[in-house]
Length: 167
Image (cartoon, rainbow, N blue to C red; front, side, top):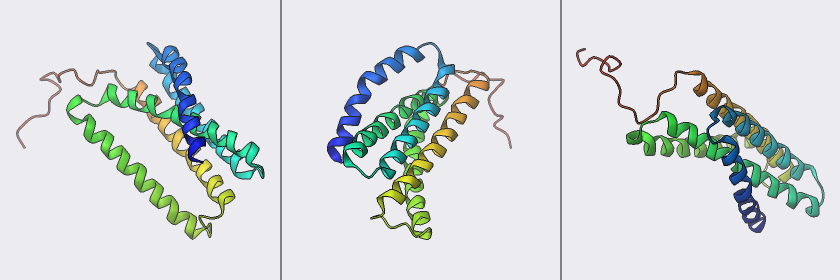
């Protein structure tokens, strides 16, 4: 599995190059790429879960890793456009924390549903549904970010926009 994960991550490199060229100067495409990547990752993982053959399951898992990795650059780019440099590291750390919390909650939910970690078919199918759901939410956030008034994250806030200092 580790070799399949490494292969998926290595295959991301040329695909990320194509995506970067496509999105450059066209941020409106970002949410579509995040959504398509998340759905593709979910489909690949569900396919790997239900197949009975390692010869088919391993390439599907590689597809899952590759498609899942395409989501992050778009999400980080959207974040970098909206969050000032001063708070960006904190925001990225909080994102990692929420990712870990979601994984932990997912494990509790699987336990409540009676899915043991040895039940690969059940666990991976559950994870595939979670991947599609999280990707859909993330793409909606990217789309919503596009609809809000554009402001570069590192632009200074004009005095008229600043909050008053008095209570």
